[in-house]
Length: 130
Image (cartoon, rainbow, N blue to C red):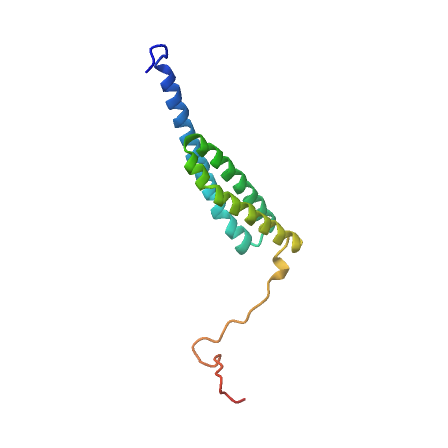
């Protein structure tokens, strides 16, 4: 330690590092939650507007997470860069699917007849004559 530098400077640097680590952990948890919500919104509930808003927020939070991680470790920040790129492409796909379907997937469903289970009558063989 240089004689002219007070030891409190190291305490401030340590406090700043702890703050960035805590912020990074919080952002990681938020992006994980947003990621888990997107798939049911888009596929199960067929809500493309809400799914697109979710993935836009997810991309923003993950981009900011990469920035916060870059304050702590450059390798960790660059490690998340492909994920941010994938989220950008997934945002494009989500918004594009919503736009091309007039932001409604409800009329795109079709009824399917369940197969006749157990009787063997629903099977069709190659050499059967009708």
